[in-house]
Length: 399
Image (cartoon, rainbow, N blue to C red; front, side, top):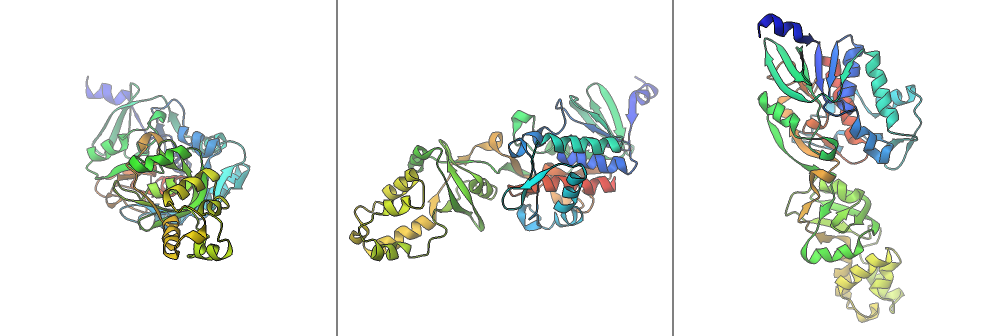
């Protein structure tokens, strides 16, 4: 095929964005409204699929407590520029401009009153304002670069542009079509990738700790710790191990072999069992625990503490040790439930190779990476969406 024939078949744009998720749509809308001719390509049959299933279908679209220290990255300073220029209040203003009713659930988490579909429709409307062209059900078969142009072959068509944005996310939730495509593409262009691992994911237990499987379905408010990270939320016992918000949070900080510490009675004073021994000498440890925890959990903990009889029968030292164990009960997970159950990914395209202001690759002009594809992972509770909006906005302003 001659050069002339190829050029006639190749469509030209100012920017091509790979991925029609939160970050990609935000970036496209901003760039389109700035007068850029933008094409968004996604292999899925509809845009915003991950948005639609988030927050139980109501989309936890941001968090009022958004701050750089609530993100995990090899470079913890990388997020500051984008989050500083496009914050939670900026996205909330957009939501309110569209008349989308919302509510704050807990800990600054904002949800739609209605449906996550409203957020997707809002982003698509913003893209329409920018005359963005969206192509779904268009698998990408090749990405090449030459003569200052990125050429993307997709669904039997070829498009080219001087700017290419990687917004295809990470490998979490593969049933939604997620994959490591972003990392393969980054490596193709010489960018480094921080080893990805599942984050915001349930942890699994084995051996002696597997006895806690009898508690499947039981939850309690706790403080969960891993290393220096600590979260006061609910923990849930499952037939495979541990889940619930507190566990999902610490899972992002957990590495194989590390223990997880759980404080089952975070409000109890240090020597509460000694005080209880004076006030209720005939009470058992199980009875005291059952007054503060679900019965099945109280029974399981008391059984493992092995303090039989009433408090009066126990030595003070044994009660102090029991109190210490209850405030820092150690579990050593044997793994996690993997990318299949992970909400997001820790790791990704190394931020060292990107501009924190524009998201452009430092050594590859015109190549950008945003959203979950990048080595930036937020806490549970709307932080990852806020990163999608902020990084998408930053790149959209630069295209």
